[in-house]
Each structure stands twice: as structure tokens, then as C-alpha cells.
Image 1 (tube, rainbow, N blue to C red):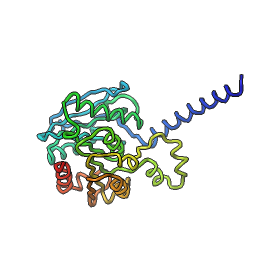
Image 2 (spheres, rainbow, N blue to C red):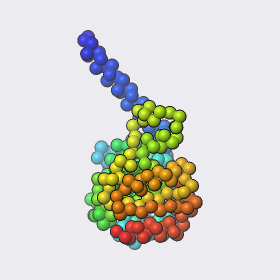
Image 3 (cartoon, rainbow, N blue to C red):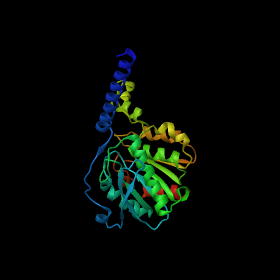
Image 4 (cartoon, rainbow, N blue to C red):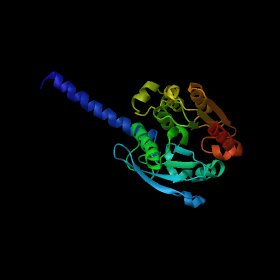
Length: 274
């Protein structure tokens, strides 16, 4: 067998092994899905619709549409752990204080959604969610849709905001990129080596200059999981109009609870301004 052919075969095998390793590390380090739904909006006294829709690669996804009196619909991209059932109390507070429609869905591999998570896959899921609202519910992104990302979901929201012209983009408790988080969590490891084994990037810092919708960044000043400095970096990278809101006393998962009425008032004022 010719040397060139052997070299190509070996290179292909090594490439396949590396791809599998990257996918494995992504699953272990970034995504922490839970398949079991433990609650629904009905448990909080909210009316809702179970929604099933399909991503462009054929993955079937599940979400909830929770109606409110406002014509605005908040498309919610949740964090990397659990599933939509762990956000029921937060949905209730948003509905009660803001009155917006809320469309929250599970990424592939989470809850009742099929498949396994990946950065590319989550973007396909998010596109399918927005397309569902536009095509099935007749919503106009520029006037009717607000993208709301929390934690990992900020990376998804930013990517969607580069693809769709929406009313506003809200980023809460987010990190600027996987590279930045890797440097924080594993300061003793060369970031280049670590990232060579991780497929996901979620580089919001590089993408925010391409976002034309108004951007609001919210962050708790006691967030030890994703420190507030990451939120400041994203805010500085965003175009005007933009707003930064510090949630005093809040950590990573209690923002809406600790922030109270002032938190919801800040959200309301920002969205209604556009």
C-alpha cells in the first residue's frame, strides 16, 4: 500500500478519534441534561400549550407556550442543566410581573426533546423555535420577539440575534465564551490544550458586535459560577442601544427572586422602550 494512502487512513482514524473525544468531553463538561419533567406551568396555575416542533435535521423538540396579555413573546433559551420543568417558578414570575407570552423549549437531549446536545445542534433547535413562532403563530420578529438567554443560553440567544432582527435581546448571567470560562475553571491548564479537546465555543464576545437589536445584560454581583466580569465584557462588546443592570445580592440561579420588583421593572422598561 502506498505511503500516501496509509498516511491518509491514519489521519482519518485519528481525526475520527479526536472528534469522538471532543464530543465526549463536551457532554461531560458543558451539558447536564435531565430527561424527567418534574413540573409544568399548570402546577403554578398557568395556562399553557405543549408544543412539539422539528429542527431542520429532523430532531423532534418539545416546549411550552405560556400565553400572557401582552403581544410580546419572550423566547427563552435556558442554561446547561436540568430542563424546562426547573424553570416553572421563574415562568410564573415573568408572567405575573411582565405579562408577556413565554415560549420556553428544551434543547436536544433535554426533557422530552430527542437527540444529544452540541453547539451546532442547539443553534438548530433555537432556529426551529423561532421559525415555529413566525410560521405557526404569525409573529413578526422585529416587533414581537424578545430573545432571553440565561447562562449557557446567552450564547444561543446571541447567535440567534445575529441571524434574526428581533425586538430586543436580553442576556442574564452569561459568559463571554467557553475559552474565557475554561481559563477561569482550569487556570492550571493551557487553555489552548483544553479547547483542542472541546468542540463548543459559544463565543458571544466575538458575535455581539454583529447584533443590531437592543441588548440588555443582567448579572448578579455575587455570582460565583459566572462572575459579573463576564457580563461586563459582553455589555462592552454590544452595540448601542444597550443597558447593563446589576442584580444586587444575586448569585447565579436566584436572580429573579433576589432582584424582586426592581428587577422586573428594569426588564419591563427596557423592552417597552423598543
